[in-house]
Length: 598
Image (tube, rainbow, N blue to C red; front, side, top):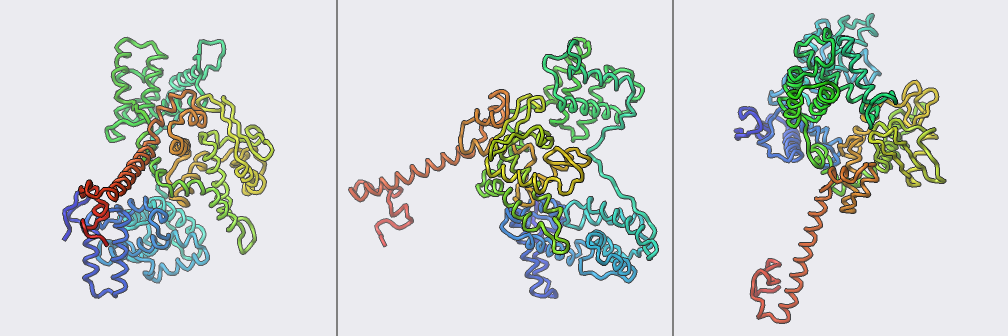
């Protein structure tokens, strides 16, 4: 029944097969068959794929659903949840999924006792209920729970569920289980602690203590050289910014870690020079390339460049060593004009006027939503999620109107970067705090200024004890953690506006929105983004307005066609005998047979 499909195993059941089996199963109630079939067809419509090309596989469907947002497909969140549930129900009915039980499944008596202990604790009940149903369905009593059972449960989650991030949910399940072990130790809860797994697939930097002291001293000396801390030494004419120093430090750390994984005893090496020879360079870079599927990347290229700079410019290399790096660096360091594929794909979102409108109006939407939920019924206190919505609204609006780098946004201080001009706020960041040493100066509109002021007066310090000078305060008077800030922005954009955008991509979005409306105004973009040279702006954004140019061309062609048809119609009325061509005959153009008017 399954047609050949190059996207998955042809022996695996497809969504079309699921529909056919469900429609033919008359033991199911009519309404149940109808709802399951409708859900499967909705899924195919959302994925823009034929039903025969979608495998009845939870991992495949889960991955595709991550790109589906109710706003983009004009349905409610509830509809997406219902479709997810019905598709899983159909797969479970056909025995494609057999381990995870539905939410309506009854627990065994032993598990029901533990479930009742969670009464009133909504969070912990939701985290453990799926695990309890799994164990009940598999005939595993509470006393037999172990790490092996936990591992099998994770496998079932990944193979049969459509929940987002199964590994994260599994981690939460293990943590909550361990909390209940301690809390209900006298209430019959099994005294078995589960190991909470850690997933650090992308992290590979070794403990710095494993590196020899001479190598660490060489690195510190090199970084001091890049920073040119000693004004009387022969340092660089253009010292590196602190953020660039940190980047080089991290790249050298990861390079040495790669060597360590290749068997190099970095604890015995007595000089950093010994680790940047051509042979060592091949060893370390090959490990990174293998880890990346045999291909280079921007990260690998920049890391290789930092190693090359130390080997060629800071050491005393031979001509052969210089030639080696000159030969291989072009193959490792990616170079291209314009935006990267990832950034270009992200900017395509803004070719849709509806997406642009959602993006630009999001701060007001978030603000209104936060105010509507800011008071709880029980205590009349402000909710933390309302506070986060307000903070996200201010962050997004600032990035829209003052597209600065995330580090500068995170470090904004009320006592250093804010200047008030009557009803308008000016944000000024001095050049020494900016990555490319170009000062930032943004005068905010009056409406945005009022929103920022309300945030400062009423919301900024609401859940942060003590005083802090930062616009976005964190713990112990410091600025908010930069990764938390980044996560808040990206998650809010997707959840509330169906837009995938990182904080740095706001700068690209600013350029696109401006160039779409003012094609060719690269100097305006340069000043807005704080580029030193117009060549930088042009190299990044030349062609950013290509889509608008194509649309404009399409409008010109359409108008020319309409004008031509109108002129032909006029001429036809004036001299019908001269215009016999069917293509130019007005009746033919309207799809009517020649000579038969109605």
